[in-house]
Amino acid sequence: MPAGLSVHVGLNSVDPAAYGGWDGRLLACENDARDMAAVARAAGFEPTVLLTPEGTVDRVTAELRKAAGRLEDGDILLFTYSGHGGQIPDEEGDEPDALDETLVLFDRQFLDDELHREFRRFSPGVRIFCLLDCCHSGTATEAASQPGGDGDAAVRVMPVVRQQQLFQRDREFYQELQRELRKNGVDGEPGTLLISACQDDQFALDGRVNGAFTEALLRVWDAGAFSGGYRDFHQAIRERLPRTQVPNLHTTGSPSPEFLGQKPFTV
Image (cartoon, rainbow, N blue to C red; front, top):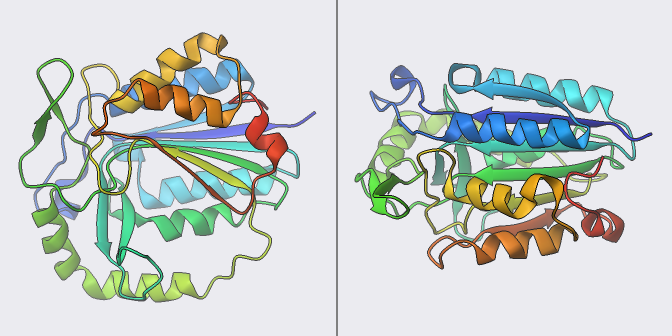
């Protein structure tokens, strides 16, 4: 029988010492992680939950590498992240928009290429399903909220001025990291399916209980009553969100039609 492992990361804040005094306070990200772990557990996954101070680069990569060592062809990994998103300049030239998207982990930004590197550690026959409830936008201002939902909902993006300041401070580190990551090949990459909260140039809204994307996902999932494949799942979530936050479906490594056609969270 196939096996399923899941890793759920939710950060309601970050370490101010690592981000120039900014703590990135949010409300619902830890709830998102707990709720997605409950979905995973009910579907037959073995979940690991990392909340706020546990959501460091070392802990996240350690859990992903542990899963890579356990999962075999035909198994499945579910990875979910709720928190801030950011962008840094891509000075190595492999991004069409000249920006690398980041997950704003507790101790530093985690490049999208770093996440892809961890996914490439898995056997090519492992199915990988990734859900990211964060902004991937470099157009935010220092303001902490945008209208949406009940009252003002914070946007899950590191303010662009802060992103610029931190990149200048840590430029040499990220440039070297980007160069190192470009050396890794992509042969034998497992089939990865990503559904993210929004497009690269949009905001993802936080909420009082769940993020807007996670709330829509949970309503569509309806405790497992949803029927259909991953593309249907993405479309149904998309229909529940405003045009200012359009969830994206993206694949890498050529996931099989059988995988894409399965009911979401199928082990």
